[in-house]
Amino acid sequence: MRRTRQRQLTRLRRAVQLAFLLAFFAVLLAARPTPGKPPPTWLGFFVYIDPLILLVTLVASHALVVGLLLALVTSAITLVFGRVFCGWICPLGTLHTLVGKFRWHRLRPLDNKSHWHLGKYVVLLSVVIGSIFGVSWLVLLDPQVLLFRTVTTAIWPLAQGGIEDAATAIYSNDPHLGSWHLTSLSEPIFRAVHDHAIVKSQQSFLGSGLILAVFLAILGLNFLRPRFWCRYICPLGGLLGLLAWRPWLERKVAKSQCNECDLCGMTCPARAVGTGGDEWRHQECLECMKCMEVCPKGAVAFRFPSPRRARIANVPVDLTRRHLLGAGALGVIGAAILRSSPQARGETFNPQLIRPPGARPERDFLSRCTACGLCMKICPTGGLQPTLTEAGIEGLWTPRLVPSLGYCDFECNRCGQVCPTQAIRPLSLDEKKHVTVGLASVDTDRCLAYAYGRDCLVCEEHCPIPEKAIYLAPAEIALPDGSTRIVQQPHVDADYCTGCGICEHVCPFKDRPAIRVTSAGETRHPGNQPLLQTPRRALTPVSLF
Image (cartoon, rainbow, N blue to C red):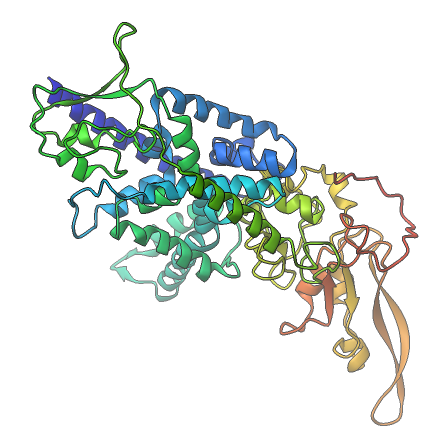
């Protein structure tokens, strides 16, 4: 009977893990623009249930995002059941488990003298200390953010490119057997994927190779130790471990049946079981119940204790004063390094750092943005790209607009609606249309109308502003034969330009466009205003604070 129950629990855990992993990918595929419909609010579900994002965002930005309160449910579950989130729910944890199955040596003696498991608590404390100074390190360390960004910017574009290339090859070669054509099978599949999963054809992201390499390196650590990231580094695991200091669900070992074979200890992926199988570290246990599954005597069980029976003594987290001081110093020094650059202090502005409309002032933006990639995923033109060095180390992989790859659609405000931490404010469409993210300027050394004396109306024709932020003015130019002609030369009206970037995107010069957008004039920064504001249009005031 007990063995049957163990198998049932194992199947249940695997089913729950698979369900949440599939739900994660379902959320990813659902993050696409639907004409006439706002994006669903549940797209940020896996961010909302993350207590670490709630804690760091609250401390760093001194603001509470209502959606993140869902993380309190995760915290409550942890108080009762222990780190069940890590062992049953976390999609990245599930991938760690799958990769760990390919290890060459699955059973190794347990090193009870190792203190490497304290690493995640040191990292957690450093992250919290850094957030006190307004610095968020979630970009590199939070498991939900890591997985979502990697799948969004690297894995899915690779898969999408493979699907599109395969469908194109089949369509071009048209293989068939008699009257049956392979395209009759491939085209409906491709059309379904195109209509329901693809945002932009042949979409790609800057720096995706580095993002994928970091992710593969994290997964590769499982070949050193099972769930290496979860055991030694993950700050979310450290936070949940502190919350699980005394879970109500306990691990029980029947002394009369246990032969101290240590099989449970050797198979425990979290090093939560001591030698002999009796000692149990509450904070490290992932509640995966593998110890119960592999026990040949059926001596291990997880159950809620009777109110009349004494609970198992807790094994404390053995953090020393040296660990605490080191973590605090790491947090302070890291925050000081990240905030020491002129750009971080607001003394200079990178012209290529064009943030999405609704983005908060840079300091506030970076204290909230997790670089999860949701805004990049849902951008219909593919213009939102992860930063590399444009925003400094602190802003690595946060979103910016790259007009050469895609522009800001005049009729789209989805990036602010899906941002789970409101680093990009959820502006109405009318408010968004009145936000300036940059300013276009004409390079007269390259523009066809200036440098080569040829008419080109592309930028003016595509400008989406009703009043036209680009206007044409006639100019007389001299031709090589000495004659003259009238050419319509484009000019930018700074009172109307919002920096959407469509002019740069459609410019005939693809190597270096003759009209380019920089971050000058962005609404969110009063200090980045090169021109006196004397607008001829009635603007709706937009607060970004």
